[in-house]
Image 1 (cartoon, helix red, strand yellow):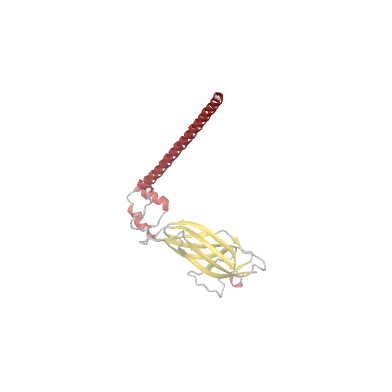
Image 2: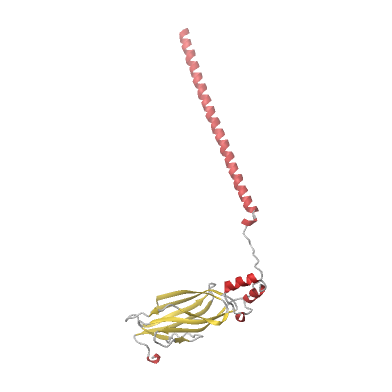
Length: 250
């Protein structure tokens, strides 16, 4: 009996020890979880504070704030801009380098540049130049000019610039035949300063198509436009490609 009690007591003590160890392990695990949660909560709070500080720093930094209004002052014509610093030798040289040789007599009081087409012609080898009328009046019932098939030609035009610098002047020419676009040419001419003498520009030589299907009537649109989208020339016209040159141009 005493042995049984001893065995029971020993078993009970072992059970209590095991339960104590289990309880201690559970307590340690629970403590670890609480500590981890505490650390995570603190990191989250710190991150939120950092984010708020970053937002506050961005809000407080005037360099990062977009300028809602920028007062550039009253616009000036090119003549006024050149005369404004005429006594400053370094600025004067810099402007001359930037603008080139500006003809002061071609400057006016206007702020916007003005481009005037003086002459528009088609140059063909061994033929008189075909001079197109300026100003141009569109007439869909008649052809503006006739070209011989397989003939080299180039477009040549002269224009004057006054009042201000014209930047990004480009030439575009679009051609259709029976309603189908068959060619589009776009050429950047450049930036031009005001002067009385006209600028002359010749495009690269091209050759008219040849063959039965190439002959016939074409419609075209020619434009001279600057980089602000302002058009100084916009003409719609018709022309023909024939087997031979017309007899009146011989």
